[in-house]
Amino acid sequence: MNILAIDQGTSSTTALVVGPGGEVLGTGRSSLATLAGPGGAVEQDAAALLDSVIAAGRSALSDAGVPVSAVGLGNQGETVLRWDVASGEPLGNAISWQDRRAVDVTVELQEHADRLLEITGLPLDPYFAAPKMAWLRRRDGPEGVITTVDAWVTSRLTGAFVTDAATASRTMLLDLQSVERSPEACDIFGLQPELQPEIVSCDSEVGETDAFGPRLPVSGLAVDQQAALFAESCFEPGTAKCTYGTGAFVLANAGSSPPRSASRLAACVAWMLGDRTTYCLDGQVYTAASAVTWLEQIGMLQGAHQLDELCGPVPPSNDSPVFVPALAGLGAPHWAPQARGGWLGLSLASSRRDLVRALVWGIAAQVTILAGAMSTDAGGPVPALRVDGGLSRSRALLQAQADLLQARVELYPSPDATALGIAALARLGASGASSPQDAVGDWRPAAVFEPRMGAQQAAELIEIHSAAARALIGFHER
Image (cartoon, rainbow, N blue to C red; front, side, top):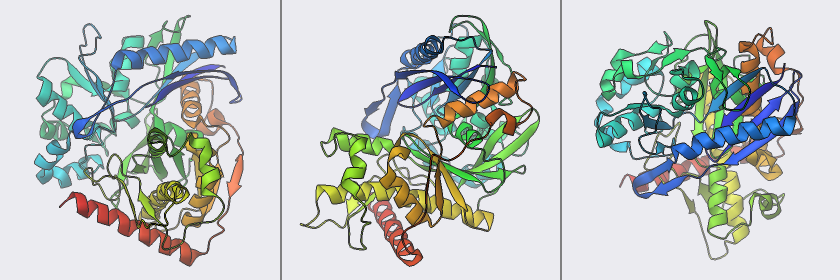
C-alpha cells in the first residue's frame, strides 16, 4: 500500500509518496514564507499555506508515478487561523506558533495558570494555541471560528471539521485525562467549545479528497513532532527524540497515563490510535534552524553547510562566548516568552568562528537542559536521543549534543521523519498495517555519536549556559 504523506511545516510543506516498506517513491516540496512584525508578530498567508499543501502533494505524486491508497496530513501544531466555516475562506493570516503577541492574555489569566496546568498538562504560555485564539478573538471580534490551522486545511480538503487528539492537546483546551475538550478551559479563555472541531484519533479516516487528482481517503492526522516521535519508533516509555527544524523539539514517550511534570515540561498526547492513548513529555527550543537562517541574514554565514567548517572539532572552553537561542522567547523549563537571545561573554578576541560555534553549542545546551528535565521526571537518564530534521545534517551539532548530553545520539536515516510518521499513521488508518511497529518498519541509525567530553566539563558548560539563560530572563524582566 502506497501512501501520500504531507508534512505542512513552518517554512515549507513536504510531501512523500511512501511505499509499503517505508521506502520513499516520490518527493515534493513547496516553500512557505513567514511574516515577522513588531511586538513578536509572526504570521503566514493562509492561502499560500493551503496552496503549498496541494502543490507539494501533486509534485510528489508526479515524481512517484505510482497510485496511492490514502493520504496522511501532518501539521505545525500551535498555529491558529480565523476562518468562515460556511465558505471555508480564511479571515486573515494564520498566527504562527512563534507569535508572541498573546503575552498580555497569559499575564491577565495568570490566576488560572495552576488550574489550566492541572486540566491540560500545559503551562500558561503564548506558544500554545488557546492564548493566541483568545487574543485573535479579542482583536477581530466574533466573526468566524478560530482553530488550529490543521482543522482548516482538513476542512478545505475533505469537508470534515475535525482535529486529531495530539494536535488538540497542544491547544490548552483539551482535558488530558479524558482526551475531550474541557468546557472549563474554554470558559477561562472566553472561547466557545461548540465552535471547535471534533477530536478524532490519529488513525481515523476522516473523509476523502480529490485535491491531488484521484479521489483518496484521508486516514492519518497528527501534529508534526508527535509524528516524528512515532516514525522514530519511540514506542516504549522513556524513549526520546529531538527534531532540529525551525525550532528544536524534544519529546519522550510517557506511557499510557497522563504525566505530570515536576520539571515544568509540557505534557500532552503523543498519539491516539482507536481508543488507546499514548502520552509524552515535550520541551521546546523555539529557534534552531531559524537562528541559523538569522545568521545568514546578518551576513555571518553563507548557509547551514558552513556550520561544521566554522565550529571545528575543538569544543568551547569555560571562558568562550555563550549564545542563548531565545530569538523568539524561551520555552520549557523557563517559560519566559519575553526573553530574547544574545551572546554573553564577548571580548576583543571574540571572532566570527567563536560566535557561530556559540550558537551551535547554545542549541545543544538548551536541548540538554530539556533532556535533563525529562530525566528528572522519569527518575532516570535518557539512555539515547534519536534525532532528525534539517540541522541534524551538522555533525558539529550532533557531536556537541552527545558531549553535553553525555549519552548516545542516533541520527534517523531520513530528514523527513515527520512525513514518514504521518505515512505510518495513515497506513494504520487504511488497514495497511497491523501495529505501530509494522506501520513504521525496521530502520537503523545513519550515524551514531558518542560523548567525547568528560562528564565534569559537560556539567560545567551546562551550568554556564543555564546562568546565561537566567541572566537574559532577568534582563528582559527588568
